[in-house]
Length: 522
Image (cartoon, rainbow, N blue to C red; front, side):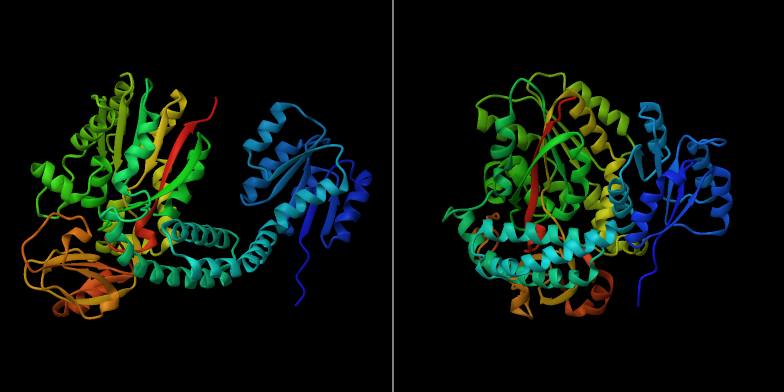
């Protein structure tokens, strides 16, 4: 079936002189009507629909900007391009302020006009076709990368590539190929889990080449920036790579963004991964060196109560001196002004490290499992990204970073772990007293019905966890599984299926962004 021609209305008192332009557009398949004044254009628009309006600014009677205002009053979604002889900044600013699609300065060539019209009317379909063609070209290489992945760098590179392809195809509206990307992501997730179960115990024992882990972030990323000027160290709890991609463009307007990644330690949960970042130590090292900072509750409130002291001690160990540290943990934006005032005061200290933890994304992810409303609002990865960006744009975190950029301060921006969209329940059997987490469990004689759903070990050293009583078993969920007990099988399936959870082994949870932000020159 032939596509209907897009309709264009060109309003210009010199329309007869523009016949070559109109003919050029018609030859390219557009239906173009020309009219000489704003009043006739308004009357025509009341009875006819146009996909695009080219509107001259200087006409007898109503000026173009006045006509634009009336057009937008009747149809707020009308797409308008201003065409004018004026190059005055005021005219340009006023047109842009009224949210026109584009702005052309006479004299214009037919080719210039066609370029603008094509971008506005055909841009989305062109981008969709281009994305599809590029992906089809790249697909064999992606499949080959997955087959050959054998190192931390290989798996991270492929994960980053697939996330970027998913976002590009989604943005271009190429939904038909998203299933192909998701299928490859599932295969990658499965391969990654099997590889981690072998590699991770070797990493934490110091065997072979390990990637940058949570324990390395401060030393590798923050330490090189220390000097006379304050440095910000910002941790956005529970941020996936695709959520970072959603907010990175906002930061790119303020900073030169140098992006990297690190691997979260296991379990990929706040009590373990974030403590490892702030202390530079594995859990067993924390428990041995500072037992008052560790207990066996597996509770974030108690296990993450000493992050400021951990960071101070790590910086003292790395630099041999006391580094001034200001620490803020922000659960809500209700007291944004007070937080920002404290941060501004702390930035007056020479060589200060201003460490900030923002918990909104983690709270949203946890709350989604408990709230039917939030489950509906953030029903999939795309919705979760949009919700994260919407929050970040208006958050204390972004306000603080804007002020840091204005003052010329550098920032290390990262997270402790990501999350995974869990779709498959895995039944586990446990004695009373096993931990309650859905992606990892510790307890006596734990057993998974499906051995392929979890990494299982009885050695605390495989995870660098503090030693426990005899007969302790450790289960870490693989792929997109979540643990359920046979006695509450249906309840847990109904409540937690399609939840975003963390604590387990997947690229989404373990391969997380870390970026160094350097302010752009003002």
